[in-house]
Image 1 (tube, rainbow, N blue to C red):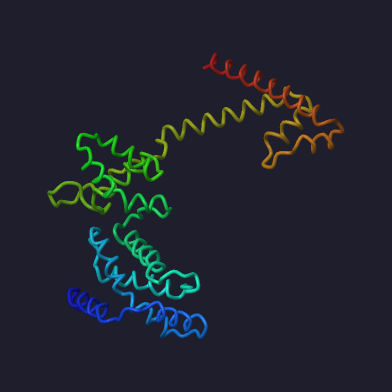
Image 2 (cartoon, one colour):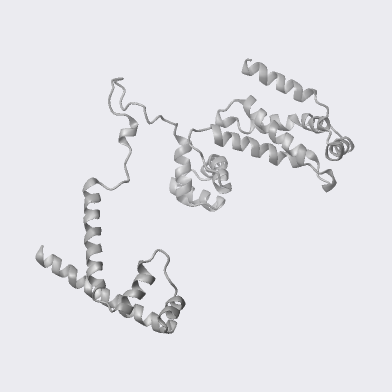
Amino acid sequence: MDIDVQDHRIASAAMAAPYLSREQETELATRWRVQDDSDARDDIAMAHLRLVLSMAGKFRGFGLPKADLVQEGYVGLLEAAARFDHQRGVRFSTYASWWVRASMQDYVLRNWSIVRGGTSSTQKALFFKLRRLRAKIAARDRSMSSQAIYEEIAASLGVSVSDVQVMDARLSGNDASLQAPVGNDGEEGAERIDLLVCDAPLPEEQVSGIIDGERLHLRLKRALTKLTARENRVIRARKLADDSATLAELGAELGISKERVRQIETRALEKLKMAMTSDGIQELALA
């Protein structure tokens, strides 16, 4: 079905739906909640389809089909109808606005970009309010720098300046495939993915890290031989075990107080430090 035709049919159905008085709204809500009458729920939702159409217009700047926005908004409208409690004294349109807006926002976040725009409440607020706030600030003072605008937006929304900068960059650019070729010659060659920076260490750094780790392990092993049996036990239990023992546990095992265990640990660490430092100096002298 053509999108324009579909939009026209939705609009016609919305305009044809009758307005509900507070009494009619209460009656339908009661039938739904008390009698589980799904027709009553649908009647409430259809009578407020105009609300969905109006809300969809506010999201037209994201370039998504209006029919899809209306469909998502109607899902939110049905959810609101299922949860609505007329006894709270609030009109359904007021209650449903939040559900409709939330459904449309989730749809925009899922489909506006292949990259998720953020799922936290602050990130959602930043996504939907950034453009409007930036335009408002720029209209008020066109001499403000971009950094000053970012700082004011960050303070207004309670986010960091870097979050604002990242989101602004995302909203200003288009999605691009990592398999897209670099250049315009159309020939096979490098792709965008080939230009991504790898955070992993270079091969030389990996080898150097392995060697340094082995040397450190050997130094520690030699240093441990300088400790007494009790010091060795405390250090292994407190510093080298996956689940370190408490001072109280070691004290009970060795028949001494917690304070005495702490003193032994401190002395043993000092001895290890001196032994490993001396060992390292000797290695440098031999290198």
